[in-house]
Amino acid sequence: MTNTTSAVEADLYMPSDLPPQPGMDERGFWAFCAQKQLKFQRCGACGRHRHPPVPLCPVCQSDHLEWTEAPARATVYTYTIVHHAPHPSLLQRVPYNVAVLSFAGLDDVRLISNVVDVSAIDMAIGLEVELVWQGPVAGYWLPRFRRVGSTVSSTGSAS
Image 1 (tube, rainbow, N blue to C red):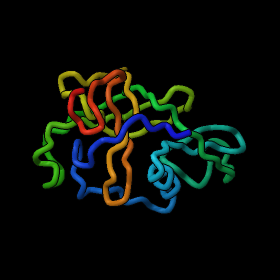
Image 2: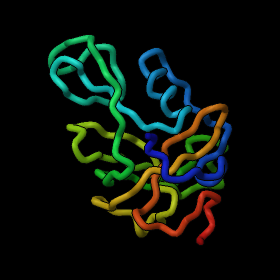
Image 3: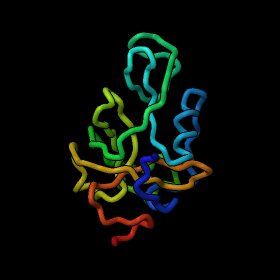
Image 4: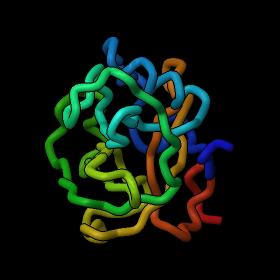
């Protein structure tokens, strides 16, 4: 079972000319995202979840890892609103949010993403969000989030 809830049009929230550039440790994470599966590493020895992916468990130093599926819902742990574009492709997107999300039952795992349907004024710590997929962007599906119960469809319009 995949934790797919919807697909978001490729250019809905962020421009398509800024794709992920995964390093060796992140390739597994992005391979699952290519299948629209949000999964995080879990230590096969002590059971601790971790993100971003690393070759050794930071708790017990084991190299035995597993991948576990994340819940489709998350909570905004913290966020910032970007008002000054760090790249020319983002000039038309400001202001936009960058959210740090936490997941129930996944220890201290945090994922940096965006909440695609919330204005800067309405963004809040503790906001409940659900997974949507943006893409494909240069061959990648990107995990994004929207408010739980949002009426934003897969094309970004209100339904």
